[in-house]
Length: 264
Image (tube, rainbow, N blue to C red; front, side, top):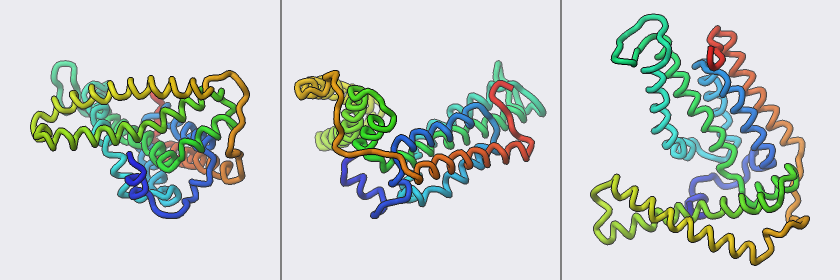
């Protein structure tokens, strides 16, 4: 995605979450994800979803931007829900069977829970990292998380090239339309453009790796960093808030008698 497109999608001015250290954001993502990965019920997922949506103003994103970025998740999440609907262990009233597929009260409840849980697990990634600067993330990983500089610089280089791939895809689409090739055969066009983009990625990655090695980025030496990255009280508040959000979601499920651990 180009810088202009990113600027159009975020609100002007700094948001509260912008002041949170990127490492704290990573910790928040883990805190929000792990408890929801080991449970499977619609109450905790829906409660977490509502609470996360209430936190959107803290991120500096508009609800329209969040919904637009959730579109891929909303498209593919029903696939997991349908598989659970058809092949979950039948319990309660059985509404229909076909070969190995059985639709029952339990499978319907589980499919709804899975659908909500996929959305709830994806939403924090959008809220936490949509406005995170890759360079700030690299600074935090190196100085706060103490990760190896070679790994951090590789992550930074990869993150910087993601926007280029989006621009390449858009440019290829416009070029094919200009040649009269973009109006038919959508599936064939997708795989053709994906292959071309893969070739671009390999060539660009090779050139980038060579350039970084030539500039000494692969040297096994202790590096200095231009911008300091430290933790603050805001980071503790953010991580604590994410823990309270998860606790509220799980507490609502326990209070409603719907709490269910995966595999039970």
